[in-house]
Image 1 (cartoon, helix red, strand yellow):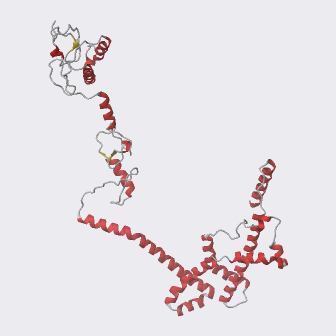
Image 2 (image 1 turned 180 degrees about the vertical axis):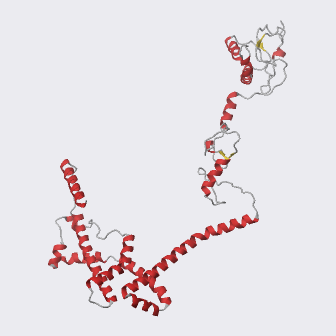
Image 3 (image 1 turned 60 degrees about the horizontal axis):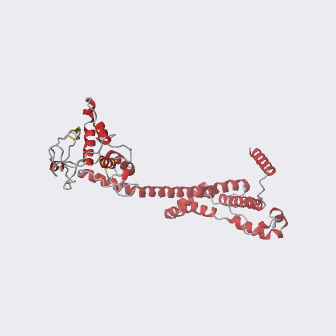
Length: 396
């Protein structure tokens, strides 16, 4: 046997990838064109996937069984030539060049990476094959793709009817490139007018609110003048006055009332009375100057002033003229002048109200200074709950 001849080989692969006998006259030059076993197995797996339906209809032995037989048998003693090109393997039957087939694992990975998911509705290509897709920003991964219809609805929700408003990606903050079709000149003019109206409407609304407040203040000032001076005298005085003076002076009446209400004169009066309460016997009873608790003389005592309430200040200031008129008619009925009677009634109301407020603040001050934090025991809990129940019954 010459060097170019090979020993007798009983098995081989035909053009369909099945096991077949190989003639004994095959030379080394012919076998050198055989593909490697790995490339043949890859081609066999590709043929198995593409021809599965045809093999199921026939009663032939599947290619997978043939592959198992090959793996169980001894390796084929095929000598490979060093000149075989790994890029373009040769076919077994005719030696013609065939292109490389991609590996199954690489194809599966690529198909998984190219699979698109909509980050709005979480649908994929398999759910709707006819849907239009878009990649509108720099996001990657599962937030890279989105349906055209889904992103349109999302942009509409963000724009809130303001066509042309800029919308950005919520993840990477990339501004979307939104292209609108060209419209006619009439639509452009209408869009410009709509934009101008949208910009000036806040200023117009603020002006209307300010004008309403101003004329409300003017009306309130005129009513207050007639209420304090008298209906006939107030009308006569406003008729003789200059209109400019009325337009400037009448709105200042509610403003001055509110500013006067914001003055916390009761706190200053209470501090003064505390310092001199020991000199007056009657004040010593209502305003004791010292307590057994050292905390009363420290700087950690609670503040005397009440928290500022805007609604309380506004209501008290605007209702003061009416209350003063009522108090004047009750306490100073003998005075004929309506202005003097209302003025005295207002002073009496403020004085009486201030006295009660000073006394209430002093008692709150005493209560805060004499409070204690008790031990959490069963007896203290029982006494505390009993006290709360009794206070609830008294208030109800």
